Amino acid sequence: MSTNRLSDGMAAALNAQMTKEAHAAQIYLAYAAWLDDKGYDGMANFLFRHAHEERNHMMKFLEYILQRGAKVRIEAIPAPGEEPKNVNDCFEKFFQQEVDNTQAIYMLVKKSFDEGDWATWHFLQWFVKEQVEEETLAMNLLDRIKIAGGEKASNDALYVLDRDLKDEPDEAELAQEATAENP
Ligand code: OFO
Image (cartoon, rainbow, N blue to C red; front, top):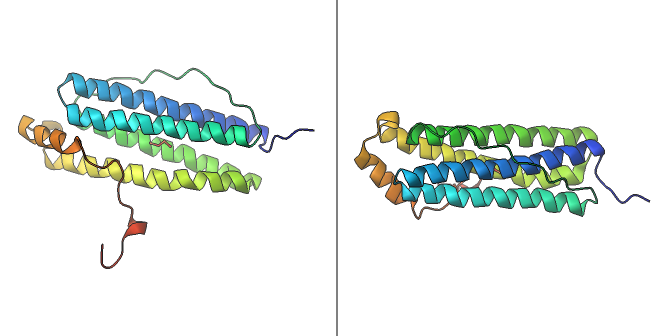
C-alpha cells in the first residue's frame, strides 16, 4: 500500500521549489560576498543572513515532502549568475529574485487548488505571507538606496546605509499587522 499523499506532479513541483530556495541562497551568498569585497560589511551581513533564511525555506519544503510520504530529490543548484554592477543593481536584483519567487509560489498555490490538495495549499500559505514580507523588505531597501542617489549614491550615503543595515531586523512589518494606534 502506498502512503504517498502527494500527486507525482505535486511532488515534482515541490522538489523543484526546494531547489529554487537553495538557488536563492546561493545567489544571496554571491551578492553578500561581492558586497563584502567592496567594503560594505553591513549590507553583506544582511544578505548573508538572508541566504540563511532561504536555506531554512529549502528545509521547510524538504520536511514537508518527507512528511507527506513522497520522495525528496536533491539536485544540482544552478550557478548564481552575473555579479551586480553596483549597490543599486545588487538590490534591484534582490527584489527581482523575490518577485520571481513569489510567482513560483503562486503557481504552486494554484496547482494545489486545482488538485484539491488542501494540505499543500495550507502549507503554502506560510510562504505567501513570507513573500509579502520579503518583497516589502526589498522595496524599502530600494527606496532608501534611491533616496541616497540610486546608481549615483555617494560614498557617504552608502556608508550610512551600510552602517544602519548591520543590525536592522530582517523582518518587514506587514499591512496586516497595522492598527489605528500603530499605523
Ligand atoms: Fe526569499 O523567499 Fe524563500 O521562499
